[in-house]
Image (cartoon, rainbow, N blue to C red; front, side, top):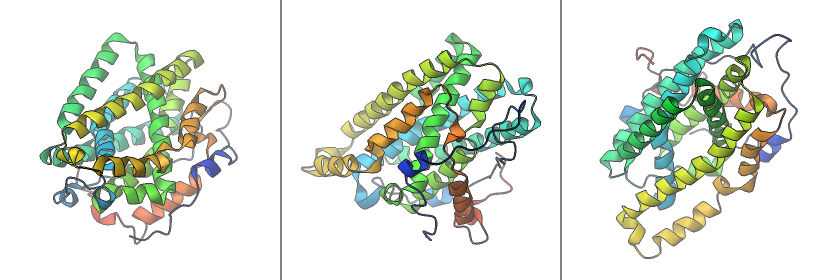
Length: 315
């Protein structure tokens, strides 16, 4: 694959960039000119021959971490759509309305394509379907017990998680290489691009409908720890079911590799914590150039994922 867009910017250099100009007074969209296109993708065929330990060099822990993330995406994306759609009629700004429609379309396709990966991983012995069920149950309970605005706050917080991870994927060649198999890497590159495109939508809707600062920050504090602990537990439980875990030296070698990777860089945690800043906005980190570079890389005239576009497949 062409690497013309690799390592365009590091995560830390992104943090030092100037802030994006917000929309004009009275605009509910932070960036009225931003487009959020729905791309109908089809990764099913490319997943058919995926090996069990698909990460770079068959890395054990990396394979299970990617699995755990993919397992929570389908029902997580469905939850995001429901929480934003609940307030769609209260959005009056035409630009934000268009972005909400694009957000819903993108998230729907993300969920569908991650289910494709999860089906293949389940065939290989991973507990993806069990994790999907747990995620679905937990989010349904949250929706029943907490008001709609609290659930929208959860979506805004988790969208900062996905946007931060997306930026890491798009800026770190090391992370992309660690994913191993082309089919998995390409799925996450596309997902990362679109998470970057719509990273401010749920946040802007939350602000547009009067979401408060205290709820916003408290919700992120809960998820910043809860999400990391939950994914960590999912990885451990999955590793305990994998025979490779018990082969001498395999787990130790894998842990050394993952521990040294950018996924555990303290800068990533600091970027997540930046959400608590009183004047925070997702567009404070300007990823416009990064997005444009990867749009050309993946979907330009010679885009590497043009063959995965499925125009006849509904989102």
